[in-house]
Length: 113
Length: 116
Image 1 (cartoon, rainbow over the protein chains, first blue to last red):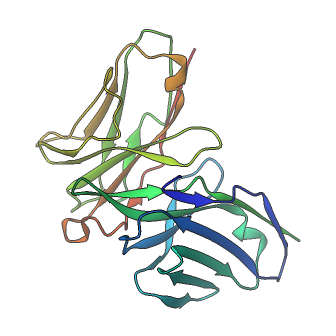
Image 2: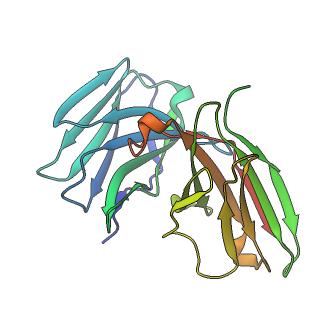
Image 3: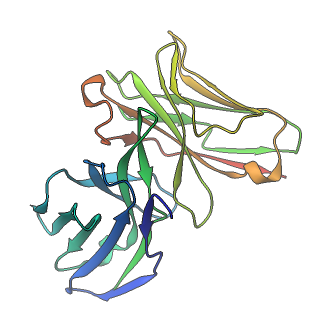
């Protein structure tokens, strides 16, 4: 089982709709979760972090965390063409006392005008 | 520009040559991370360094790869005797000491290595 799993997509969403991106993780002890956005050929950029169960909203973005289900998601409301990118879920995984930020393979999102 | 600086942005090497990738962290950041990204794959952790110390190198291949972060100057990821499978984008990230292990990393633009 991969430590952080995402559907690779591509996920196509009409402009103005809600894009829903999902991620599951294997380490039940993980406490810190992140979403990064990566445009093609560019570097990853942190867009959301979440540490507690429930929802966290920031503008058009909402991160949702359910530790019991080991599930974290990202909702993008009122999707814009500029949201087209690969979204990377990242989780801090502890191995042998070392904490490292572990990424999923990413979900490619395309917003259709 | 106070961002994470990586160079070269693009590097072409023939099999058997050496590749050196450099990374200068953001001002005030003393923690450096190297990740490798293969096409259609996620970012894979390679190594975490502080000044003059390797903290976690569990993601580094056992042979040909090494990393350092000297007291002065940039962090360097060195790949000896490159093979075609080393072709990838290598990203450096840095974090502030107070944000150690929070996952809030600032990434450079990456160095894209092509091995012929």
